[in-house]
Amino acid sequence: MKKIIVELGERSYPIYAGNDLLGKENLFSENIKSRQVMVVSNTTVAPLYLEKVMQSLKGFDTASVILEDGEQYKTLAAVNDIITALLEKRFSRNSCLVALGGGVVGDITGFAAACYQRGIDFVQIPTTVLAQVDSSVGGKTGVNHAAGKNMIGAFHQPQAVIADTSVLDTLDDREVSAGLAEVLKYGLIRDAGFFDWIEDNVDSLVNREPEALAYIIEQSCSNKADIVAEDERESGVRALLNLGHTFGHAIETGLGYGTWLHGEAIALGMLMAADLSRRMGWIEKEVCERIESMLLKLKLPVTLPDNFDPEKMRELMSVDKKAKDGVLFLILLKGIGEAVVTDEFDEDLLMETLNHFASNNSSSSEGKG
Image (tube, one colour):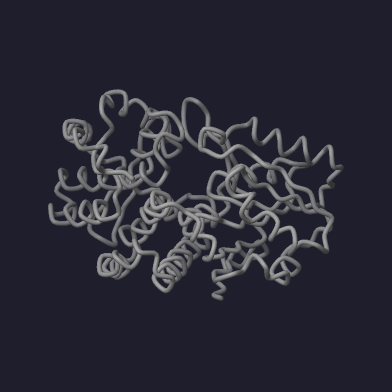
């Protein structure tokens, strides 16, 4: 088991990564201060792992809430369901929520924890690659609005993250590939050596070799922990973690939440950000080709969906948390391992990028699993 600390002073917390962690009662007893614990999961994950987690929590006063599975259920209604259950079970302001699931469950549960009685503890137990390498770490919580993804939320750090790599065995190939898109992101924004390693070991990752998966989870969490420790509230360097997200969130919103997995949309978003960076003369074509090659090997999309209107996508991109005073900021590349946040992009070149990926969408269905 690896232990990584997110250094945030009094709010510092551990990330545990390793095999068969759900059954380690000490991880729960050492990191949960409360007597009352409510586990939040969904209809897919709960039948697989809820009983095991409850067994590890046998010394606590426990309850559970089971949500519907899918990005389309990442709403205020789901938060209300959790808060209603907390009230009905008379959970106090000293209670703790445990998020057992992927990024959607983690985001909803974290936001409910931030809201209930002005803030209670929560623990993340991420069950997807994407959640283990990204969304469970850093304290971003929230839900979607019909007009924009993650527009309702709060920063609320967990007490601990317990990333059990053995649960990844039950994921389908599409979920694994979507999670690996976020892994690629760390190489692109700050760790060129990590990107090279992923290129060299992509077959091992696709084949889910345990040592390879353990390595990318550890490296990704270490990268994100360093960034969060430096910039908890995303006023500076943390914004780089949003590489591809302005494009990707527009795709998710335009298609309807849940049509594409989050990682699939982010994968294409990163390629689009690279393409715009190339058009601006910041990177060579070879960089785009390397990224596209990796996405294809991971069976991730490299073109926009059929009939996805570039003008509509540009409009959706304007509804973005990184927009300030009506000005859109994008994360673009200066090279592999070097990214920047900028509003100094050429609007005409941005539309060229959007049109390019729309015009090539005849093969879009081949891009995602």
